[in-house]
Image (tube, rainbow, N blue to C red; front, side, top):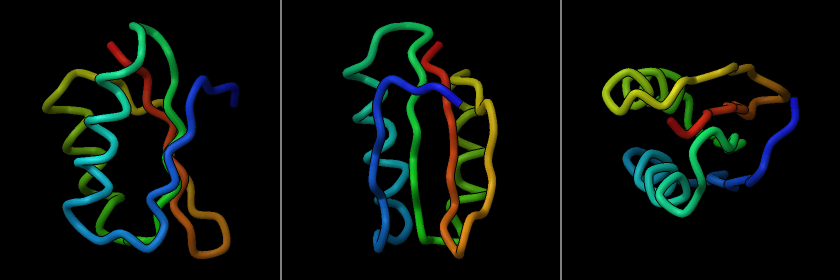
Length: 75
């Protein structure tokens, strides 16, 4: 998937991946896509909740070799 910015949240635990995602999205233009890579299994639930609460669509999520990869579009 194409993306405009990548956030490396590896090694961070809750709530840091969400805090960093929020900050990264704030610096992006509407309709741009943010790729987030996390190693925190709790981020799966957190990213879904964050997307729902903020209205920024979670385009996809997958687990690759113990890492969680998310693509979120800025509303």
